[in-house]
Length: 68
Image 1 (cartoon, rainbow, N blue to C red):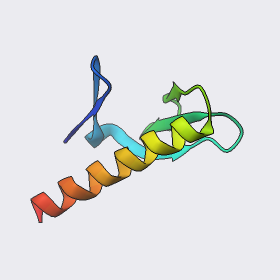
Image 2: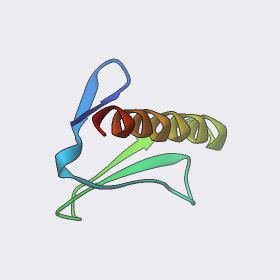
Image 3: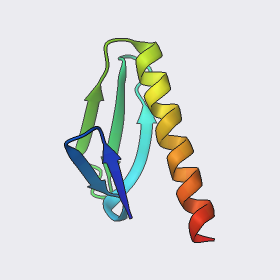
Image 4: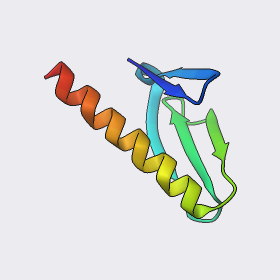
């Protein structure tokens, strides 16, 4: 399964272990299964990060419902 990030990037969720908000910075972290490869998505502030995180979670929930 693939997740689109913006207009220029997609990630293969088969290799992702965790997607989480960073509590110390306005970023979202995508942690891959090997636990050494972490992609950090920066945002201007916490509000922008929180909106993006909510959108990612809602899209993942919709995809899960579609495949059930």
